[in-house]
Image 1 (cartoon, protein in one colour):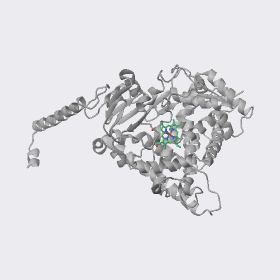
Image 2 (cartoon, rainbow, N blue to C red):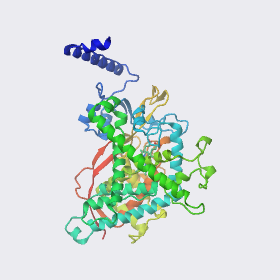
Image 3 (cartoon, rainbow, N blue to C red):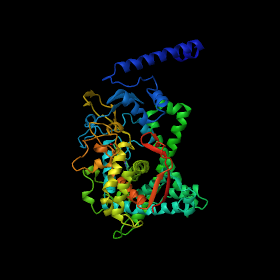
Image 4 (cartoon, helix red, strand yellow):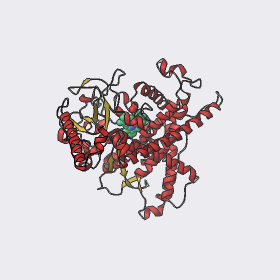
Length: 543
Ligand code: HEM
C-alpha cells in the first residue's frame, strides 16, 4: 500500500515530502547538537557535513592549519565535528589519562567507529589501526621485540650506510660533477630523494627484500639508466605507490559516511580504488611472506638466518627462536604468528616508517639552513667524531656519540612536528580534562599546540637545540610528543633516531647543503602527517 501511494506522488508532493524529511533531519541534528553533553566552544557545524566546509574553504583541507586556527580561536579545549564529535585537547595535563603507559589504561582505541576500516579489511589487523586490544597487543609485542633487538639495530645502521652509498652514486652522476656545480645546476628536490630512500630502507629492513625506488627515481631524471632491469624497478614503484595511496586514502573509510562511499560516484570511485589497492598490497605481502617461510624451512637449523623483521617474526615462538620461552607473555600469546598476522604488521611498519622519517630529515635540513650557528655546531660535532674521514661507514658507537645531532632532531620535531596530532577514543565512561565523558568519545591530542606552550617550554618560539642538552631539564611530562605517548607510542622510534642521526652525519660530514630559496617557507601539506611537498636544495662537496 505504502509503495503504491509513493508511486502516485506528483513532483510537488515529492518535493514536499523531501523538504519535510530534511527539515526533521536538520531539526533533529541541531537539537542533538545544542543538547550535547559537555558543550565546548568550536566552529559551528552543518548537517551532513559537520565542519567540513570550514576545513575545506577556510583551511584548504589542511589539518595543521585547521586545528591550529581553531586552537587560536577557541583555546585549550574545543570541539569540531569531523565525521563525528572530535574533542581537541591542547594541554599535557588534559591528556594524561589517555596516554598512561599502563596495560590498565582502557582508552587505547583510535577511532570510535571501525565499520569503515572493517570494510577496508584493515581493522583487527596489524598495529596502527587495530582496535581489537588482544590482537593489537599480540602483534605489537612481536613487532617491538623484532625492531628493538641488537641485530636489528646493526642491520639498520648497515643499511643506512649502504643505501646512502647507492644514493651518492646517483647524486655523483646528476649533481656533483665539477661542471654541473660550475653551471649552478647542482639543485635537487631533497624531499623526493628521501622519500625514495626511506622506502627502500624500510622495505629492506622489514622484509629483507631489496626495492629500487631510488633507482627508479634516478631513471626519471637521467638519460643514463640505473643498473637494474625495468621489471624490477616497476615492481618496486608499484608497491611503493600503492602503500602511499593507502596511507593518504585510508581516512576516507573513517570520515566519509558509508552512504557516500557506496552510492555517490566521486566517493564510490575513490573507495573502490582504495579497496583494489589494499587487495594488491596484501597479495604482494603474502607472496613475500610465503617465499621467506619456504626459505627458512629450507635452511638447516645450524645455519644463520637473515636479520630482517620478517624473518624474526616468522621464527618467533618456533623452535628456530632461541628465546622461545621468553618471547611473548601470556599463554594465548605464546604461539607463532600466522601469515595474515605477519602481513598486517609488516604493512603497518611500511606505513609508519617511510613518510615520517623522510619528512623529518627534510625539515631538519630546512631548519639547519636557516640557523647557521646551529649548523656550525652540529658540523663541529660531526667533524670531531669523524676527523677528516668522509667515507668510513657510521657505527653504532658514532651514533651514540652524536648528541648534538640528537638535540637538533628533537628541537626540529618540537617546532615543526611531523605528526601534528594523535587520537584516542574512550572505551568506557571516564573523567577526562575535568569533564565526565561517555564511552566512544574521540579525543584529539593537539601535539602542535602542546609543543609551543609557554608553561612547558622556555621561549617556545625560539629554535634552540641546546635546551635538550641542559642537564636535569627534561621536558615536563607529556609536553614532548614527537612519537606520541602511552601504550601506543611509536614502536619505530629507535629505528627513526638511528636513521636520522646517521643520515645527518653522512650528509653533513661530506656535503654543503643550502636552500635554493632562503625566503621560501616550508612547502607542506598536512593530513595524518605533515608532509613536505618539495624542498629544493643546492649540494656540493665541502671544501
Ligand atoms: C621520525 C620518524 C617517526 C615519527 C615522528 C613517528 C611518529 C609516530 C606517532 C606520533 C605515532 C602515534 C603514536 C600514538 O598514537 O601515541 C606513531 C605510531 C606508529 N609508528 Fe611511528 N614515527 C616515526 C617512525 C616510525 C618508524 C621508523 C616505524 C616502523 C618501522 C614506525 C611505526 C609506527 C607504528 C607501527 C605505529 C603504530 C603504533 C600503535 O598504534 O600501537 N614509526 N609513530
